Amino acid sequence: MSTRKNPYKGPDHLTLEAKKAGYPARSVFKLEEIDKRVSLLRPGLRVLDLGAAPGSWSLYTAQRVGRAGRLLAMDLKPLEIALPPQAAALVGDALSLDNEALSMFAPYDVVLSDMAPNTTGNRLGDQTRSFDLFMRALGVASALLRVGGSFVGKIFMGGDFPLAQAETRRLFEAERNVRPEGTRTTSYEIFIVGERKREAPLTHEARSTKKEGPREGA
Ligand SMILES: C[S@@+](CC[C@H](N)C(=O)[O-])C[C@H]1O[C@@H](n2cnc3c(N)ncnc32)[C@H](O)[C@@H]1O
Image (tube, rainbow, N blue to C red):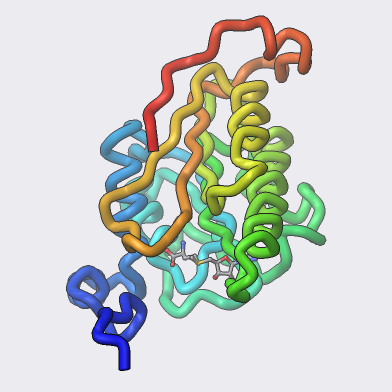
């Protein structure tokens, strides 16, 4: 029998810490780190959270934006926690819902996506589905995020990753990659952050000749 530790077996210390603080999942620490690194959230902001269940990012975000802010949390599944009154939850599939259905508090200041496919063990297939979810989230940001707003989207590293980065750069003045410390060592997920949404996306030609914004290595 293998003596390697299974990183998914039983709650680890971050999961226990999250639950103790009232969050359903350890993912809250990833958003907290991104928030600190890129100054993402503050009171009064309007935020869309795609792939929100069980609800850690949503609860953290609702607390950060406060009573004057607004949050729409959506997922295929219902959230496992109650959110404060400044937040609403929507059950649905981001790949089939139209932008109108996600526009309750638009235009948004921030669009978040922690959406991830159920992993199958087929790495290429999982990466492709993750890329599709990322691109859908970017499309929602393109339609519903205000000019100057911010975007955070999860993606599994793979062959399409440079394309996801390039498309983010077309839409935002700055693009960077963040792999939070709370990410499991076995995970190949990373977050692409877009800062300061452009008034209009760069054309593909303009993007290939324009100097790129600041980036951070994974
Ligand atoms: C890593 S979990 C999100 C955790 C969440 N951010 C939190 O902090 O509690 C990924 C979520 O993406 C959701 N998801 C996957 N595909 C989706 C889709 N097509 N539309 C909406 N949600 C989706 C899954 O149901 C799952 O709850």
